[in-house]
Length: 472
Image (tube, rainbow, N blue to C red; front, top):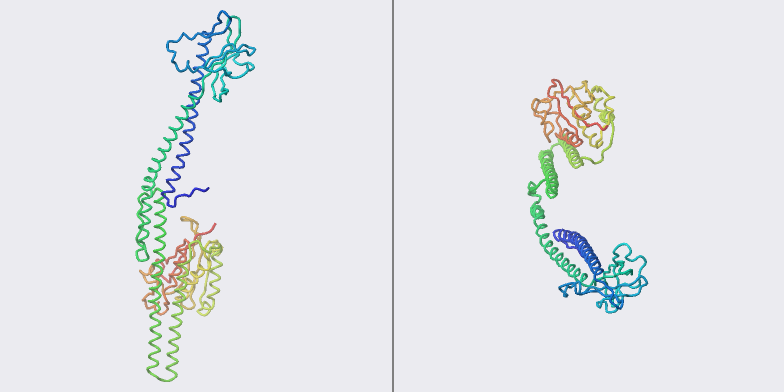
């Protein structure tokens, strides 16, 4: 039959605590009982040996040759040991020479055993005819030229009764101790689990509207403190995800509102004028232009959402960066040829170093970086790509993209990575897009443990520096 365990944690802790304590107490009680029994048995053997030695001096043969025992040597005939003593004397042939009245005619141990009591005092437990047990000591004794086997014993009933009482007392003490331990275990478990109850109560009050709340950590070094830290880290990630979702929703609403409003305005104006096909064609052209911008914005938002949703370790592969850059250059070949831009690469052998990352996302990042460089590069200019290896902290591959465009306005080298940022400068305003390309690139590169920045010391054009961790 399977014993049902308590349903709550405090009850289970108390149950296992009391169970382990019960096993230990019963083992301890068994050892104490066995030790006490052994001590009393040894003490009984010692007393019987002394009694045998005393009895040997009290035995005598009367005038008829009958063996007798003087019993007038003690001053207190009510002595328990003397009154309960059982004694039997046999010759070597097994004839009974003397048997005490306490035996009531019963033999004490049966026939003589070979070598019994020859050299020392032999001790054994014998069963009497009335069913009781006695602890018997045997010894060979010579008197008046005759050799005799003396057997002296005491009933084990008093000893076993005493040991039974001792066992009952031990059992009662163990049960009382377990009851006290159960009460103490409940109190200790309740006190130990109090921080867990407080954390659970506080966690129940955390919703999407107050994700900034955190669990209190009383002792960071114990298991409950560790659990609270893990839960707080989970809340940090949830809060970050909610903030990203809210920011994405707000950004999408803000950026989509402008082109949609422009489309509506162009359509309303065209309808109100009611002019010829030329005006309608111009309106449709404007609508298509705004539709293209709207589509570009939506694509950028989707890329941004995909980059944010990608896990830090998900879908990673090992590949060479220079191969990926060449693949992107092939994708942008039409723009490069149309603008007659020359692309040079230095250190391609270094660029063959392998990185471990999400290849599709890193490809998107490099597409945005190269497209941004080509977009602002003048016709018939040079776009320089270089590879180098740096060993500052860990092995990293540094890839630089330097164009000959108008460059970045001082003070905007960090702002260009912000979402929907477009420079108000005259040289770049006409070529600015949705302002999400570099944001996507930075998010992707940060996710794989890399770094992206613009060199502020460059005087002509813009120099984008990308550091990627090398997979050895």
